[in-house]
Length: 363
Image 1: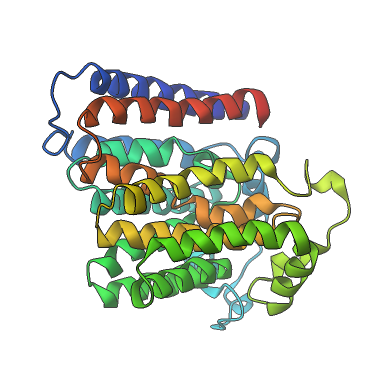
Image 2 (image 1 turned 90 degrees about the vertical axis):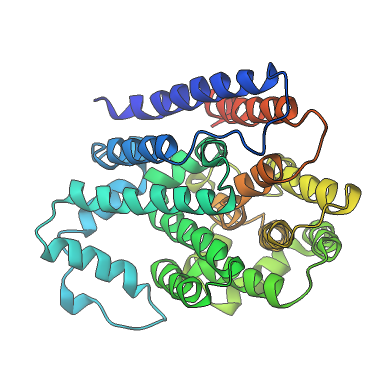
């Protein structure tokens, strides 16, 4: 299959399924959203099929970015290159070495990574929205960066989805498994320190979303006034070596746009608005939702303060991987409107439609 055909095929499938389900919700005569649902098997099989299809993609740097880099690194990495050091991402290296030692080809290794990336997202969506995991996965798979971080920033994407599953376990008081998965995610990509710290702050600290929202608004002002200074400060902390590199980049050929990304900021504002609408305006109390809204807002505020960095989409993903859960969770689990099904259908169509427009005309 032509590597350049993967993205339009993925988009066409997501749009068609979303239109089918979204229209059914819009024309629904009742509000049976709390008991309606496709069960877990259909979305699981869709997720599994998608992971297998994408896992066996051709090795193409032009179509899949970092895929080609990892394909070149895979045969060269040996056991002697890996050290159990939390200053390096040794769990990712051990995954590569383990797959290589088991005799897996590069394509099989990429399949393993894709299965982890997609299925951790599925099980997280299932835990967050057990009554309708299909709706949860449509929002996850229809999000703006889902395809890109499945084939390009694959290590970052896989680590973030493991964090998403870890959050669902921590909120369910399964602390041992939640902490274990958190450590695994950190050992795969150290940038996950940001959402992990935000999770523990949200769980152990303040639960009032208004504080996180105020911090998010304040971050816009800070970035507007002292963006470069703040970026340099965070880069000096050293929790992710890539940040230092990206902040210092001056060659604009390495990124299409650098500066204050108002387009990204407007896109990022939707979950903050949804959190305000549910938690503050509607005053609907749900501990799980409060936490995920706070985690999103805190992580996104960090990205806003380093928004001028090159490759800032990499930092944006440290909050954007929670984006679909913030939007979909209240649609499935909370009684927000009298015409819940109809509004859910329209929101799904608008959500996936925006992704389609961005891929078609902007990306």
